[in-house]
Length: 528
Image 1 (cartoon, rainbow, N blue to C red):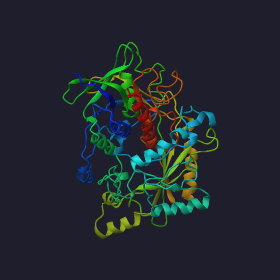
Image 2 (tube, one colour):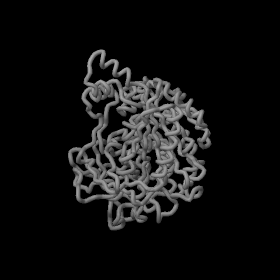
Image 3 (tube, helix red, strand yellow):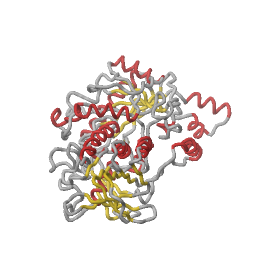
Image 4 (cartoon, rainbow, N blue to C red):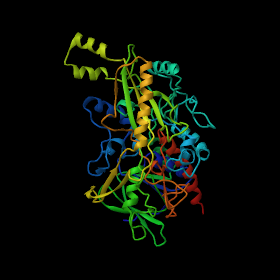
């Protein structure tokens, strides 16, 4: 079956795909979005949360066949724990922290002799950061003394520090360590026809906001459709990008829920299928012109997969910290994000968690006691924990990669993803510096019973980056500074896949900013 030809076909309805669809649709372009997963009803979130709390029913579980993958490298990477395939994508269960990369993050090679520089500068993307903050509804304050230049303020007022974060601030001030608020795409007042945050505290512990005060890309999916120019097709799995005789993409072949195969033609194609699936789709789209995968003359497709490895420190205080009251973090430390010499001191960010220690329900479930004895046990063991989490910068390495593994097939008969992931010396050294910093803070707070994660296991943040990197040189990158594939004139990519390096901060705001910038380029290309 062959569908009607439109101006733009976008693969993926997550943050990048939904935001791009809206930006193009409001400019009058006819757009179709292919989403492999379903569409959930935001009005059902209270019921979804109720079932989750009662019996652990997962709100958006992976499909074990469709989402099958294998792992390589020294670490068995937990891919399906960190992604959601549905309209809204991974924003359905993200933490909503919305930070800008630093100016220094775009020039690691120039400033520190590490990795590679981005083909664009912070100055070029800075205006789009401001627009992205408005689009996502970021609540925050310009109180980070290390932040790069801003030309605009946040659209929503910040959330105040939690009680526990106030205790952290006192200790950090004695140590000369600066902390700041956590900007987040979560409503501190009503915004975008979504209510103010009501502090259910489930957005971090259960990755679900029952009132949708936290932004999800469902917002822009709905806005895109409201333009009258955008159609979002669910259960539509893109499997191949097909070329015409001139080397441009002619159509994308996708399979519908009923198993039928459809060819979707368009003038321009955009792959916004999250970092792993974007690379996989290009690798599946082999042809005589591109025997190693579409747009992969450089061999860079699938390479340089990055994450933000994490290490967590937890301790008990002599006073109450009142955790679990709001769930999401309200304070961070960026003093270690932009060290003077990253080759000597790796970059990392500290986040102060508001979910430290067991909840009363967890204590009760593990106790075996009842009545007054149980109540006393909970009073003695709840509410005096503090937790710090360090997010480590990971340098791009070619051996950390997404590939295909023909030994296993998905439900369409295509090779599954093979993800190879390991840590290098830079990340391990970053861990040691982070542990030292967290130890100093916990000692200053008088914490006891201190425990560290990451001793015998790897914690990851779920921030998938790299695999289709930007660059000026077609021999070493996949897309150019405008996110157009070097080798395919009507193919663009956007999302975490195009990152050259990852810094130590959360990537979603940069994904949104890059997408807004790409929307202008794509819209200009469609002009007669």
